Length: 212
View 1 (cartoon, rainbow, N blue to C red):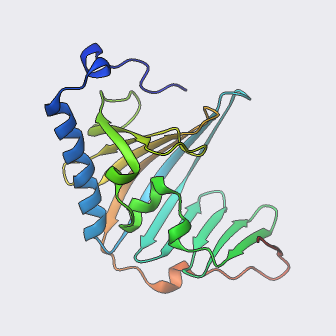
View 2 (view 1 turned 90 degrees about the vertical axis):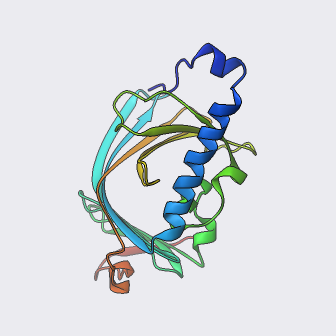
View 3 (view 1 turned 135 degrees about the vertical axis):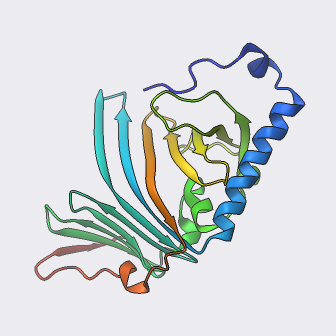
């Protein structure tokens, strides 16, 4: 899957000051939105594309985020990722296997998702430019963000946001050309969400692996 196959010639050759200002304003709106809210819940549809292997996988579920450091990423197929403020848990219900990375905090969340916690600054970490709408993604203001420092995990990031700065979709492309697309819907902010939602205890009989 290829995104941003062609941009307007003028924009590609020499972006005009108004376009740059617009992209900056959009990024700042996104930043302010996630700095302002305390928590949010959303349904997500995920499409992962691996060109090297010719594979495309789809998944869906719900995501819950609560500041300052809580995350629950819940797949419909039973997989679960929980960041409880002290550790990062990954649970595979089908195999009854859990992995835990103790001491993992929000400061270790990848830069492309840190803004969801109101952390980091998009404009410090990424060069941004406005781009045409991407087919298959929701309507909204579309930004392409390229890391200012080279990263194997993120070659580029595309964000689609609404007028309030709420992200409707994100597309991450890594250095191998793998693409991870997320489309969000049914978004609710400032629930509130109980802390108990972000706790995970491996079921009896589960195999637990400790990551160092």
